[in-house]
Length: 404
Image 1 (cartoon, rainbow, N blue to C red):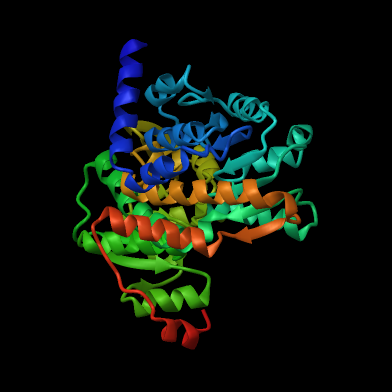
Image 2 (image 1 turned 135 degrees about the horizontal axis):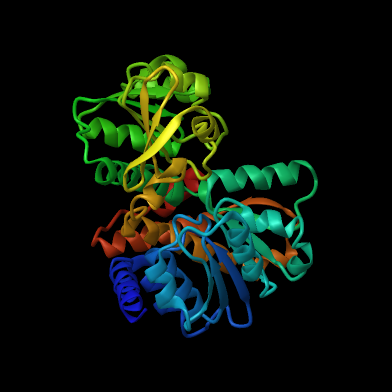
């Protein structure tokens, strides 16, 4: 255990050394301790960057309870390093009921603020754990999947409190989704398979900000990239960006790698897999393991483990498909997740959004709210300063012309 703690502390220290925006916010806000008296429940992929963020919240006065938003993305060394410093409920490979119990324990602090990644805490607060949400001022949501859940609750008239759509902020989806997902997905795929990407055919299913990043990085690695997209506007964007565009069920026949990034169930179905090229590598970059029909693979194909995080499935037609990370979020299950500098921006946005909710949430009606533009700009300005970059300013005349 001491060795595990040491490894976790090293990871957290490395992350913290490369998160200048979060560090500057913590330093500036520390004198006032703006979260004093506030209890914050956090459910995100529990690795070093998340740990550094949780410790920043604690340093600003919050009582923090922490869980992982995916049982396969929790890093046991980081969890070990956090025990005794703040409340943490997670372990790698937790079974479904154990994972849900961890979430319940995290909500046991009866939070004032919730930071969610995928909406699992939020759904519990609208169901079996509703009594634990009586003090909730508001929620910050990190992901597309979580926002789908929040907006469904809002549409049904059941959303209990205000929620900030952190995922939609400019400094989130332009950088976290595109550059973070783009780099980390291919890092995980390459380290897991040790296969060449250059010259291969890649099918990216979904062309939102995440899919765009995945497709861009695949092309940068020398792959021939096809995009499958059901939204005609996004499909048009992919076409004009120079990608081939085709239905997933057609393009999969030639694909060497398939990466899903839709946030929707059944993006690659069993019938698609039967048409796939022999030896196709399947990876999912969406939050839940529902985008590739993993259940059908397990029920109808013969499986065997061939490498860490790689399962070979032999289909009834004799073709083989290689599934990475059990169809879960490949960049976190089989890799280290987004680059540190990218999560520096995302967690800084989260901190400012939580601060805004703490101050303003009591006067807001239940609903999904955008990140305040001033928070987006604050993170951008601090990021530029951390890189030694200066930009121009609008003159009073220009501001008047633009109505600012």
